[in-house]
Image 1 (cartoon, helix red, strand yellow):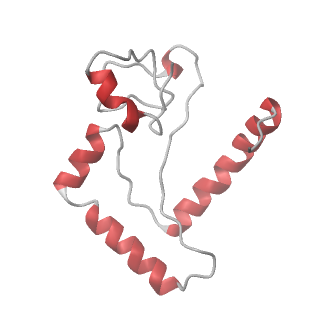
Image 2: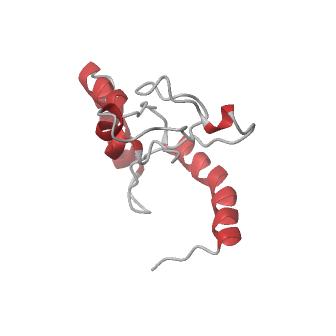
Length: 124
């Protein structure tokens, strides 16, 4: 089963123990924690998704608070042990701005809206 970074952290122990075989990852590039696992895009040209995690604050959070949260997260991501722990579960830190996150969300919405529509997915 293809694994994305979203499912990789919970599966990595099983993969490294040989209890789960990775056929490919949906990421756009290979995952550092599993360098021998190909991307699905290596087999199916153009297929891939850059998975991401983010912190969100409620709408209307004052800009100084958002800036402070952003600075503290960026500071945490400068610690070698944090980066190593993230890399061990297949995550690569990216210290972006609130504006960059907003742009990423807006860019992903049409794609995932189409996936939901095409598959008929619903929330239970």
